[in-house]
Image (cartoon, rainbow, N blue to C red; front, side, top):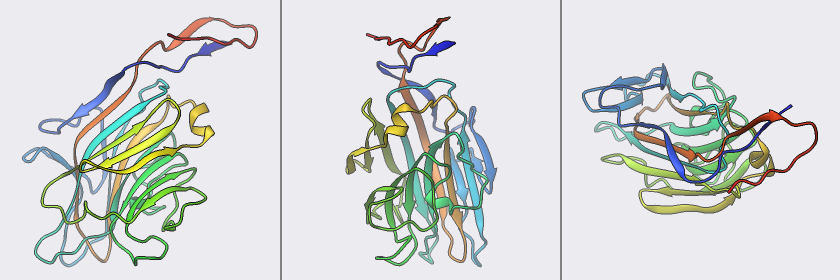
Length: 250
């Protein structure tokens, strides 16, 4: 057997791009395009009459497991003078996240692990109502407002919708699996505990996936300035291990 040790220590950058010239190792899918004139990724485009679109952007897995992460990215939901906005945008971190899948709804993420959902369309007070959610354990369409099941946190925050410019988002996950989310400099969620399955998971094959969609109502969904950081200390012990062994990394 070979023993694999989770990377620990200081955060270092795995992926960083302002999209001024290239998308690097990222992969576009569906309606997504790389706009080099403005230096951004446009996932969906406003259209009148409405045209349903699904756009995705995938950053491949790093190949290592780390005990802490920081994801920074800017999002924008904008339209023309009609002032319509739908349906939303999401960030997913999972081995089975799929930027091309039409279900669950793109604004509610993808895969069976972590989702940060930015839902801008729906009826307040019901399933799939507008706001921001932390989801873990399986993305689902139209999740409830109430916390429970795969919904770990919900806030009826739509401050990022109809923004004249990009809104910065920061996701921090520490060594204890506590997640903090900041949107436009404001703390939306603090110390949301991810389940034990996250802490024990081999995250070496987990991808970073952004998705957005439109339907009967449309909007321009864009991302920019994506920076993915992960802890980068000792990574592996490549010697034969014949029995259960505990290692301490300092």
